Structures are given as structure tokens and as C-alpha cells.
Image (cartoon, rainbow, N blue to C red; front, side, top):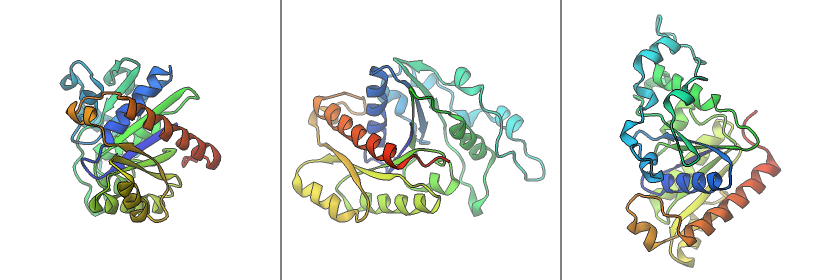
Length: 255
């Protein structure tokens, strides 16, 4: 399964990505986590011993020029990337991690070489039956404009019970639909009570909420490090079960 996790900045995308990765790895699945947010902190959240030592793929300027090319403003949209995981994506406790790094904005619909390179990398990650690919996307909706999330089985949009978070989620849903992404689901985070649940339900018309992660003081106190508290563990398992039922029944987005 290949999943993209999106949402407004600060809603808990990285926490959900890390928790999913940890559960799948602990069950013996092959996990490939992709930090596609320029404000990269997935490695630190997962507890990698030296996050700063991981080379962001977008910084491989010479390699990108070699693979993508730049001749008369034309780029190869499908450069070779199959050799990158072993060279630049370290493994830690059963989770292999790729850090994408920052990509300059592609104005006017133009795709820059870095974006073409990273998009090809995401599309290349072929999923075996026992493998899971989890992409922690950048905040907001810019990644959808560049099309880097195509080829995933489902989009999980993390939302908090605040209006700006709901607005971003609805924008992600609409843009993803325009790109042909069929499976777009919401996941509530930091939900304190039934009033918060009702707020999410009322604010996301026509968008299925797979589950919610309750507000957890122990997790909040961890300050960015993943702590698989009982509440988080149970919530993520329930979300996974609902997701696998929906995607298995409807089929993935890839085709």
C-alpha cells in the first residue's frame, strides 16, 4: 500500500506518518517512509540517531542535472531513480527513510528539475504485497499542484477541530479529485470530546472520516518525538483497519 499524508501545517501529519510506520514495521512489514515536507522532521520524530546526516534528495544537484537534464528548458520527466534508495535512504528499526528536501516553487505550471526528479522517485517506489510506502507531504496543497502525490493508493488528510484546518482539508479533497485521486479520507487529531467530533463531521461534508486520534497529554509532552501511547496505538490501529477495508473494496488510485 502506498499512502500520502497531508493537511495544514501543525495538525499532526508527521505524528500520524510515524505512528503508521512504527506499527507496520513492528508487524514485520517492509516500510518505506518518505519525508516530502521541506520542513523535514520525520527522521527526528522516528528517533533516527543522526537526522542531520541524511542527505535530502533535492540537494543532489549534480545528480539531478545528470538524470533530469536541462536542454532548451526541457526536462526528462521520468529520470532513472531506482538506485537511490540503497545509497541515500538509511534504515532504522525496520523503517527505510527518504528525505526529499525543499523544492523551489514551479511558477506558471512549469515543473522544475528537482520536482521532476522527486516526482519520479515517488512514482518509482513499487509496493510489494508485504511493503508499505508512507509519504509525509508538505503542508497545504502545493504538492498537489506539482502532481508529486500521483500514484498513491489513498490520501489521508489530517485535520484538527479548527476552521482553518477544515478549509485546507476540503481544498486537498477537491484538488485531489481533479487529479483523479479517488480515495481521499480525513483523520481527526487532538480530538477532546464529542463536540470536537461533531465539529469535524459538520465541517467536512461528503468527506469520510476514517477515525480520530484523541488529545493525549503524554504525546504532547514528548515534544515531537514519537511515543506510542495506548491511546495513539489504539486509534492508529482502528484507522488502519478502516483504511484497508475501504481501499481493498474500492481499489487504489493507481492505475
